[in-house]
Length: 334
Image: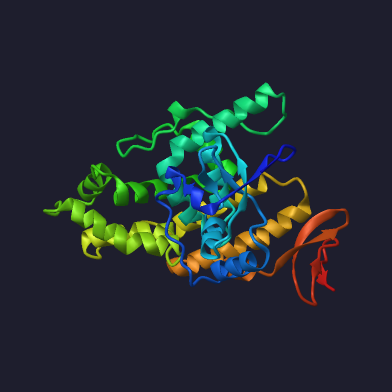
C-alpha cells in the first residue's frame, strides 16, 4: 500500500531488520523513561512517524519505534524508502538528534562508520547539485579523512573541520572519541599497543582479553552518560598505569574544548536572541560535563546570564531585580 505523493508505505514489522551500520548500537534499556513513554504512545496511537528504510527492508532510522511495534504486535507500520547511499548520513543525523545521548556518546558511535558518513554526505551533495538545489553543504573528500591509529595529525583534514562544524562539536572531542574507539575496538589493537608504548608500559600477555575488559568497563559508562570523553580517556590511561596517570592541563583542555564548541555553535546564528538561548543551553551542558570531570573552570555564575537590549545594542546583564547599565562615566544599578 503506497502513497505516491509522500512515498510512504506500510509494512509488517516482522519483515524489517536493522541495517548493518547500526550493529554496534547499544541495546535498548527498556527501563528508561524515554522508552516507556514511547511504548505508551505506540500502544495508544500506533507508529505515527514513518521509519526510514532501504528498499530491501533494512532500518536506517526508527529502531525504537520498530521494537515498540513488535512488542505491541502491530501488523503494519508506516515506512519511507531511502536510497542505500543515504543510510549512513541518516544514521549520523539521527544520532545527533537523540536528546537522551551525550555528544561524546554520539561521536563514539559514529567513529566506525565515518567513511560511510562522508560517502553518504557526498552522495546527497551530488544529488542536490544535479537537481539545482541550493544548500550550505560543502563537498567532503573521502580520501582526506584519516582515522587509522598510525595517522599523523600534522595537517588537519578539511573533512574533519567540516564534519565537526556540521555537528556542532569541537575538534578535540572528535579526536578524543576517535582514540577511545580505536583503543577499545580495533581488531589488531594497533592503537592500544601504541598507547602502551607512549606510556612506557609493558603489553599484557593477552592483549585481546585486556581490550575486551577495557571495553566492558568503559564503553557502557560513556554511552549512558555517566562519564564524558575525557573521563573515559583518563580512566583508560589510568588503568594502564595503575592509577598513576593524570590528564595534563585537564582544566585548560576542558575549557578549551568548551570554548571551541561554543564558537562553532555561534557561527550558525545571525540573531542575538538565538545566540542568547544557545549560550544558556551550552553553559548548562558544559557545567554538567565539568562537574563530572571534577574540573569546572568557574562557569556556574554565568548560568543566570541573559541578554538584554541596551540603546540599540545587546549587553549581558545578570537576571534578578538589579540590572547594571552603563550610561557614561558613572554607571549605576537600577
